[in-house]
Amino acid sequence: MAHTKAGGSTKHGRESRSKRLGVKIHDGQKAGVGKIIIRERGTKYHPGENVKRAGDDTLYALQAGVVKFFTKTKKRFDGSARKITVVSVSPR
Image 1 (cartoon, rainbow, N blue to C red):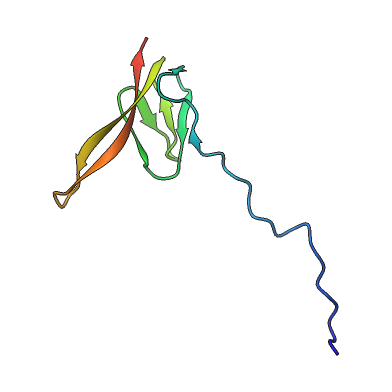
Image 2: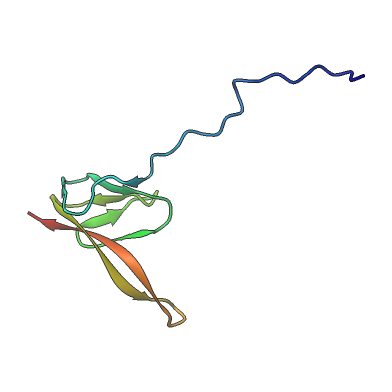
């Protein structure tokens, strides 16, 4: 016979809250100065014209305008190429 009680459930022990990452302003939409375009971890999207990356890899607009997403080929140090997605803001 077991000498320990059955383990009950607990309200603690959950994982942390989600960080709400992702694209906030999509291609063709208007963005104001300082508005967050993408919240991300790492560099899935790269900053282009009038877009800057913050310390937590968030991309935000430096100027008001329309958001544009496009792909571009970037060379690595070993000479191989890869495609990256660039986000830019074109002024109104």
